[in-house]
Length: 244
Ligand SMILES: O=C(O)c1cccc(C(=O)CC[C@H]2O[C@@H](n3cnc4c(=O)[nH]cnc43)[C@H](O)[C@@H]2O)c1
Image (tube, rainbow, N blue to C red):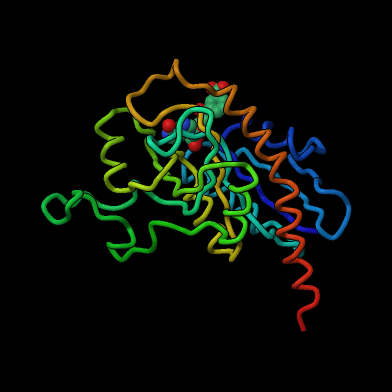
């Protein structure tokens, strides 16, 4: 039996995931049948932002007891970055990127910003699970690209343009993925991030956010992911049990 920890920001996102994977009322759920590939899900609403996400993920991983998690998923709604993703799209991360963690370096770097890795204080990006990320993206018909984690949601065209200059491949922005990945990396657990796009990254226009539609898309995405995770994690469990 595989175990998956899903970390969302808010209760509405947690409940959207639980609608797909089933729930025992405590944020835990079994899905994927009862065979060797069956997967048990714990689904958290950690709070918004990378610090809350990292703290909640680390706490959950540390308390996982004798059956550790096989995978951590940062999940929720997100902002889509043109031209790669717009409202209604689903983005599966190829990498989980800290987009505003670093130092302003005017005159020292072309972008006036140096990220944490370049500063020599760690890493500014974690790769998503190299097998499951493409498999899940293919099953969902999703955009697969870097997803940016920011502490301040973008609200101007100038800030959006700056992020695009620094991360031309990025397709989505949200506020938790890198924090989840930081905690998962310390525990040696692979990570995924999935974002259903509720709004465009750019000038703030809260009235244009399509939160209900994005939450419905999140439920649908998880429903379609269940068999993919069952296959992928089942194969790993089988490999572990036959290893000498
Ligand atoms: O107001 C509601 O009913 C509601 C229901 C579900 C979720 C929300 C949120 O506001 C979630 C905040 C969460 O969403 C991510 N997010 C979404 N769009 C962006 C964006 O353009 N830039 C950054 N983050 C975004 C983020 O991960 C937040 O934690 C409200």
